[in-house]
Amino acid sequence: MDLCFSLISRWKRDADGNVINKNGKKVLEFVSIKRTDGGGWAIPGGMVDPGEAVTITMKREFGEEALNSEGIPEE
Image (cartoon, rainbow, N blue to C red; front, top):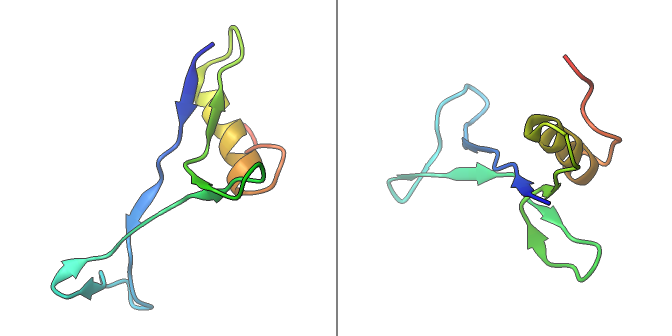
């Protein structure tokens, strides 16, 4: 089986949409999850089921792990 991970990031912005700088450098934010099996931090991801498209796996795993849901609805 294959693994896939979703790395979601953005530049931190203020209420007006301006990129925030700290010490002259842009601040990068990213999505991480706190694992329930030990408390460590991880990037959302998981195993690709046989015959499943990786994009479907990424949506499902991100929904389960980062959004505490049963996945993201299909478009």
